[in-house]
Length: 99
Image 1: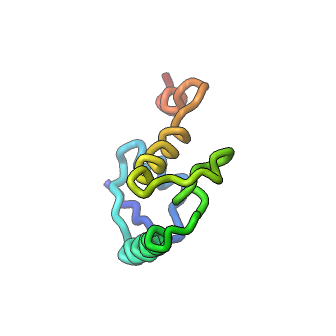
Image 2 (image 1 turned 60 degrees about the horizontal axis):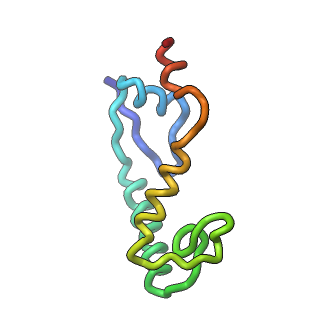
């Protein structure tokens, strides 16, 4: 099994495919962990300052001026991921697996 190392610069489409097909495992490069910690510190600063930041302390799109309470922000981020995972077409995996 090969290994895909996540770098702060990202990974290739071939890496994504290898992981999706189960032929590669994933590891985080230490520099990626550092970059994530830096990003988290920025979000923590936004939280501490209470300032409005699109998609962090506010809603998205038409709800961009709607303040999201701190205790609901994790829910907001989960909802964003779920909304991007929804679709109307046949699931992609059926095309990739040849079904």
